[in-house]
Amino acid sequence: MSTPSYTSSKQRLVNISCFIIWMAYALIQTALLWWFEVDFELALNDSLVSATVITLCCYVIANALNHYLPRKEKYFYVVIWGLVLAAISISLSRWILQYVITDKPYLNQIDLSLPLRFFINALLIAWMAIINILWNIQQEYKENEQRKADAERLAREAELYNLRQQLQPHFLFNSLNSIIALIGRKPDEARNMTFQLSDFLRGTLRKDDQQLIPLKDELDHLQLYLGIEKVRFGHRLETQINHDEDCLMMTLPAMIIQPLVENAIKHGLYDTTENVAISIVCTCSNKLLEIAIKNPYDSQSIKPRRGTGFGLRGVQRRLFLLFGRTDLLETKATKHIFTSIIKIPQL
Image (tube, rainbow, N blue to C red; front, side):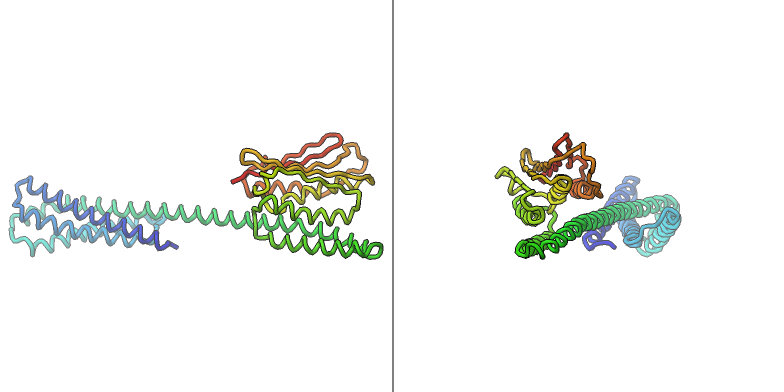
């Protein structure tokens, strides 16, 4: 549906075009008739009547096409309308002129010029129709592009929301299982883990409507997650977070680090009984925030962890949806260390 601004803009275009037609028609016809030694008063009366009638016909077809864009197979009808209006303009002008002009010889000259006048009027009406059709085509194209952009934005937001939601169940189930296991043996730790899980989920709900948040908020939320994991794994899990102070106010997608840290814990701790240190290093330069997560990795392990791969895939997909780039997640694996690196452009 046309917007009010679009309708008013088009109406202004129609009014200006009609005024130009009236002025140009009247001036040019008067000048030509006077050049051919027609009495100036006769030339002026003839020109004013003819210009007024053709302007009205142009205004009629412009308003007829104001909210109507004929398809290609319907252009034939527009041509018919234009020819009919041109014939009406000639007939109406001739009928009015017989009451305005009493000079019979001049009226006879008008009759002889009717085919030429019909041709000129048809061209003017066609010009007005073409202007309106092109305007409608342009507006329809803009509206289609806007609808396409809105649909893509809604689909992107829905997919981002779905990706965010997929982060919760896996972590929640593990945490609840750990709480159940601790209730009998270590009730105080089970109670503490329950409080930490509650704080973590409350923070997650607050971030649901936020796409980009400061690094400081993301690290604070990550500490809640790591606190829960440390209750699960005890002294075996060691974490170290290093960051430049200049990076704390840089923004990144909410909860983008957690799946990578969860991935690091899974691959670093599940296949060993030794203490495992996971490091998170945040640096920034040239409007780019870079976060590296490192965890021990045994490429020769006879029991490799088989996961869904959602952590890395989900992060990469979110980064692509938000920034339109596929080079913002990088992984490196040596014999003993696995590194995930995410790069966040600062818009």
